[in-house]
Image 1 (cartoon, helix red, strand yellow):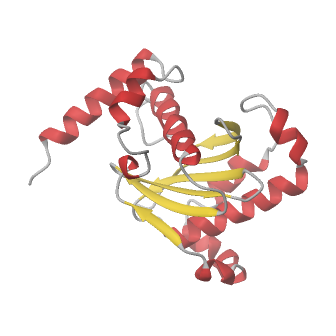
Image 2 (cartoon, one colour):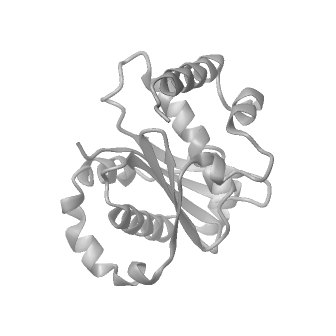
Length: 199
């Protein structure tokens, strides 16, 4: 089943990516896992934004998810986390629309000074609900023809986005942004997935 899990907007400063606004649909996860999954999705989104160059789009596979990211030349970035079935073109068109609307409602000096997840942008959860079905975005994708000409880089794993010598396992261990529960969840998920893979 096609599923959107998260929409996030970041400001990419020279030193880090700062979350400005996010919305999540985590109903498919158990109640006790939701906060951990949300925390890890935020961590993965932040990492991918930090490793994406300005004016570049990427789609990154990570386990059962696809992280679609667009970092604009003005340092504003959007991330969509979806399942593998969600159309890449629709995801990137939606990111463009959300960032354009965000820009129209908030000035760039607010992005640079806002603390994490404090900007008022109440339409983000509505977008998350409305575009669960990618067919809803048909009119949106027809209007966005220039996206076809934009090169979207597809990465097979988040490791491909990291800098040479960097490992996701090390980043998770060192991260101050992840709770102990999230780190344990990551290790358990990785162990579960590795025992079930066939070479």
